[in-house]
Every structure is written in C-alpha cells, then in structure tokens.
Amino acid sequence: MSAIRGLIDVRVDDATSGIRDLIAGLSKTPRVIPTVYGYDERGSEIYAQICDLKTYYPYHAEWALLTRNIDSICDQAGTREIVELGCGTATKTELLLSRMAINSQAPLRYVPIDVSEEMLRRTSVRLADSIESLEIHPIAGDYHSGLSIVGQRPEASRLFLFMGSSLGNMSEEKRRELLGDIRSAGRRGDLMAIGVDFDKSRSTLENAYNDPPEYDLWHNFLTNRLTCLNRTFDGNFDPSAFDSRLTYNTDACRMEAQIWPRVDVEFRLDGLDLQGVIKANERVTVDTSHKFKPDELNELLSSTGMRIMASYDESAVKYSLLLLEMM
Image (cartoon, rainbow, N blue to C red):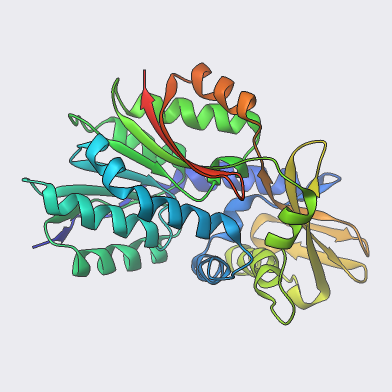
C-alpha cells in the first residue's frame, strides 16, 4: 500500500520574498514579473499541454533519454528516497518511481516540492494510486524552503531530481545558490538527475518556444501570469489586451519570454497597494531560459561540489540528461 503523509506548507516565507520581487519587478523599467507566478494550477496545466507539442523538443528529448537509460540510472542510484524540485505533473518521474519501487525492499520515499499546492496534491494522489509501496511526503514551497526541510531529515542516500532544463530558468546567481542548497541538503555520494539544454541556433529555439500555427498555448501560458496576479492580489489586468513572444538573445544565450499591451494599460494590485501604467508595446519579461555552453556548465557544477557521473545525450537537439554525484 502507498501512503501520502501530511503535506508540509512552507509558503509563508516564500510569499514575503516573492512579493518583494514582484513589487520591484513591476516598479522598474524594464518591467519583470517573477516566473513563480506562472505556475499556479492553470499555468501548470497549460505547460503540461505545451509539453505535448511536437515542436517542443526539450520535453520529448528528455523523455526519450529517460526511457532509453532508465535501467542505467536506477542501477546507479540505488537509493530509497527521491527528492524532486518542481514536480508539476511528475509524468517523467512516475517512470523512475515505478522502476525503483519494484526493486526496493523497503517502501520508496518520494518527496515532491512545488509552489502549487493544488498540483502537488493532485500529483501525489495519482502516484499513490498507481505505484505500490510508495511513501509520499509533499512539501508546498519554493526550492530554498523545501530543501531546508529535506536537509533536516537524515537519510542514508538520496536521488535529487531537477528535470525539464529548469536550471536555465534562473539567473546565474540563483543557479549557484540553488545548487548550493541542494548540495547542503544532501551528503557526499548523493546523486542528482538533471536535464540540461545547450546553446544552439536561434531558429531551432524560437520554433520550439512559440506556438505552432493555430495554437495559443504559449501565449496563454505567458499571459496567465496576469490572471494569477489578479486573483492573488485583487488586480485588474486584462490578459486579452496583451500580445506575447519568445525570442532568443544570442549574446546572453537566453530565451526571453515577453508580453506587452497593444494600448496603454493602467493597472492596480489592490492587495499590494500598487498601481502604474504600462505603455503600449512596452515589454514585460515574464520568463527566461538559459542555454548552456559545455565549459560554462562544467565550471558551475565543479564550483558547487558536483561532478558529472553519467551523461545521456540527444545530440540532434543538443540536450542532455545528466547524473551528477555530490563530492
């Protein structure tokens, strides 16, 4: 029998930090809406649909690498606890959990961390129903707060998961901070599976990160930030007044997701006592996705106490699933 233990909610501190970032982002030029506001329940559902698009290679490449190499990954991991950062629907993770639970003599512990409590509960119930001998310990919160809870629990060995090339969705400073938090929550010899997307042609990236003809998933995903802000902070944004586009900044090796109003927009967020005007065609950045160069990635990992133990590569699209060891 599988069991879901009591959900731990550490989002109080997250909210304080997130609100500071939001106020600063909407008050400066160029304006920024932090990525976290894209992953409410609706945002997570839309992103799951984006992953089904044939043009969105990161998901399909990672799925292919995982299915081809799952025996190798599980054999090397040999752990009884899996900690996942940003579990979402955990579609890929379910494959790993099912495989590892079969060979686990004791119940396999799964610790999913996600900012969306709704998605966290739904995913936990689905996994408990589909996998035998699984103990699920969900944590609602951001990565930093969730990992602080994980670090308080002694465990012989762990496999950390950070899938979907999510490491690229944060600044260099935040990447180093996160890997440092993971290393602190683990111990020497623990492993981490991580998806990494590498620098490639602008046309390939922009084709993957924008809607194919007759689709509006990416657009709805990006403008859903405004809906989330309205609901959370009693706002008046009209998402239908905004256009969107993702473009590749070749100098920074970064996909940049931006939305902009077609006419001047006066906005207010009464819950934050915040108001302002976004001019017509003024770009608001709502997400970024960095694409790594190999030397850059190696330096980042070594500086945060990790080394590449195994690299599973989809060379056609320059995407890798890495198994890292904590030093």
